[in-house]
Each structure stands twice: as structure tokens, then as C-alpha cells.
Image (cartoon, chains in turn yellow, purple):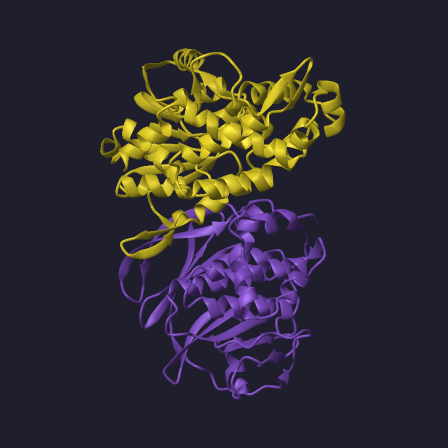
Length: 334
Length: 278
């Protein structure tokens, strides 16, 4: 693991913010909004330009965040494009010593997300399984930035100390995550790979891994099982009370407005003193960020403040909460 | 979705006189079918060297029958068989495969040698089995009246047999001797099995969707930053936005395109880029 890269990439909220402002810029550019705002426009005119907007609240947040981050500027009672601000943003982004394969994700976002954002603004419900989002995250799943984040989260859990334990991976996606967990733990754990969509779990089951030099698919491994979970917990997870040692969930909770229910359910299935490892966007202040708007435009929910997230953990019976940077959380069930 | 159920069991092989532990996988649809009727069973085959073990399981995952079946010399026999061709062209394969419909007494030997009549009796028993003929291994895969006889390729792993059995079972109805879509899927799975032992497993998804109509989200597939491949996109572009899966299979220009389709079809469906609509 390259800790130096970690420090550079995850070290400040500013870098995360630049990344997500860049995504919002891409969305606005690709739906023609920035060209439309060459001259100042009021929000009613912007609504009319986009057409069929039913999520006015979200549109307002988009414009506000874009203005706060220099992509737009407030002009009287309207907004106009801020070309200087955009140039600054591009310059800042180019200075980020990012991972090469992040470009793939950036291109995926450029291609798939503008249409999704338009649909969400018009009131269409989207989720992680919608084709555009699933496709974006199919590629994102393989990016080294995601892999690095996953490694960091496992390190917080003690990495090798997790050997021999029963791990529930909530949000296994298409298999890269279970694969990494198994590799890092030398396949010495009982892993339950779970996600909220059967087709995602299906794809995960067919992920190919090399065990003792032989190519196998995950579903063939004795120590790996699979589960489809209800993200809104109308149905409990298909797991017994106090049945797992560790719950691992990376960049998933910000997609659902059922976070407290999910955390409560994590608590139910964890053994006493079991460990919860969460990768989730956290922020200092209770204000709308570019990351919040991005997730909302992609059909998700939002990030959380440190205090808000700690309170949810506390309410579900977790203690000894540790937060690393603004993305990694470790807590223990009482 | 292709949810899979695992079943583990221990069996005693009467031939080896030893206990074996096995774990097999049953897809959801088959699992539900097994649940419906006590009498319905599913069989798995395990290579034990000079014989193979046939294990039949019921819907509760219990072993209901075990048979050690010796690999046999091909039975002698001549019957009135009629050669047939598939309605649409099938690509040439480097694997020898003979497609047979026992009830109609027809066979297709376009991808077989000139001795098809000598091998047709292997399909008569109506049982999926492995045979040794003149020292060469042949696999007979049976589903109802249909059978496919294959000469085992030396590079195929043993797992390929059970995956081909599963692939054969996915064929719902029709006559494999004349069904071009079936032959195309089967031949491309055989062709690719030397390099990828899981291709036959992937092919079951396409086989089980034959006869269904799918909607293809070509815009998104084309936009993919890491393309599924020019050939596949060309194939998907050549059919209507809504098309029968059979037409998709029949539109593939050659073996490479077919193999690409087999390998990508599950992912395309799981990403909702291809959806079954009826």
C-alpha cells in the first residue's frame, strides 16, 4: 500500500471537493447549462431551459454549490457562468497527482451522468442499479483509488487480525471488493458478500479469482457465501443475530436515506464487541457540498457530518468510534 | 437473476469403495423446479477415472440415487437416421459435435467427421454419459429427445462436462439438429472451453433466454469508456432495439463474435444494458 499516495489523495476535504466540483462542472457542461448561462439567468429561466424540473430543491443546491465553488457566479438575482473560475478549477484539478485510472472514471461520469442528472432533476428515481450508474461504478470499482480506499478501511480493522473471522461485506458490488478482502486476508476468513441488487450479487458470484494457481469463481469458494439485502430494511438481513465478527461497507451508505436503519441492522447481526468498518463521505459542517449534490444527482442520498454519523452509531449501540480523514470510520458494538 | 444455490453432500462410490465430498451449484430456476415435485431430481456426474459416478439429488438437496457407471465401448447398432441442416448457417468449429434428435431420427453432422452413423447409437440410451470409443473419450449430453455427441478435447478440464450438461438442460424445446441458435451457442461454448473453462456456464444465460425478447440500450453500451469490443457493438447494432435473443445469436458473423457475446451477455444483463422484456 502506498501511504504517501493516501496522504496526498485523501488528506484534505479540499481535494475531494475539487473532484466533485469537477463532476458537477461536467454535468452542467454536458447538459448545455453553462452555455445557456453565458448571460445571467434567473432560476425560473434555468428551470425552463432544463424543462420538466420537479426537483427544484436539488437544482437550487446545484446552482448554489457551483457558485460557491467558482463554476458559476451570482449575478443580481440570477446566475451566470464564471469562465475564470472554471479555468482555475481545471488548473487545480490538473495539479492533483491523481491515479491514472481516475481518468476512466472521469470519462465515465462525463458520458453517463449528465443524462441521469437531467432525469433525476425531472423527478425520475434512480439508484445504484440504474444502467448509467451501474456502468459508471462497474469501471469505478476497478480503479486503484477505490482499491486503495478499501485497503485503508481494512487496515483500520487491523487487517491481519481479521483473519479467521466472519466478515459481512455490505455493498460487494461486482466482485472487486470481496476479491481484495480475500487476497489481503490470504483467503483466511468466512466472507459473506452482500449487496442490495440481485443482479449485482450475481455478477459478484462470477468474479474470477486465482486460488493456488487455479482460476475459480467466487461462488465456488467454500468460505464465501452471498446475500441480497434490503437497503431500506423493510425486511431484516437474512442473517442471525450476533452472527458476524466484522461488517465492512465501503462508499455505500451515502446512497440511501435509510442510514440509521442500516446501522441498526448492522448492530443486530454483529457479535458483541464486533467491528464495524465504514467508508463514507463525512464533513465538518452541516452544509451542502459538491459531493452531496453529486450523489443526489446520481440518484443517491448525501454525505454526513461527523457529529450526525457518530450519533447514528451511538444510537445503534456502537462505541469507541474512530474516524480517519473524512472517509473512514471504525466502531465497536457494545 | 441467475441466483445459485450450493448443495454439499457426501457419497459413497460403490466402485471405488470410498467416500467423496462434493459441492455443486444449482441455479434458482432449477432449484424452484426441484422444490415443486418430490419426483423431480437433478443429476451430477463425477469423473472417477475408469468409471464415473452419477449422483441424483432431490429438491431438499438429498442424494436419492448413486450409480457408478463404467465407461463403455460404444454399442453396435444401425438405425434409420436422416441428416439435416440447421435453417441458418452455423460457423465451423474445431471441436467435433454431432447434434441429434432421437424422436425425429435426424442429425446434423456439419461439425462432425464422415462417420456420424457409427456414433448415433450413443444417443439411443437417452442418458447423459461419457463413452470410450477406440480409446477416445466422447460425451453424450441428453435433454429429452435431443442429444449432442462431442469428442472431448484434450485441453478441457473435467468441470467442463457438468457445465455442458447444464447448458444442454437450458434448451427448452425444439430440435437441436436444425436449431441454428442452439448450435451456434453450443459450438462457440465448446470452441472457447479450451481457454476458459467457464464459458459453458456463461453460455447457459444466453441459452435460457432463447425465445425471449430483449431491449438493448445501445447508447450506453457504445459510450462505455472501456468498450465491450467493436465486434460486439457491431453485432448489437445490427439488430433492432428490441429483438429476439435468437436473432441476436443468428446475427453474429462468426465464432469470435459469438464467443464475445457468450462472455458478455451476463454482464450486459446485470448492468441492465440488456433487459428481457417478454
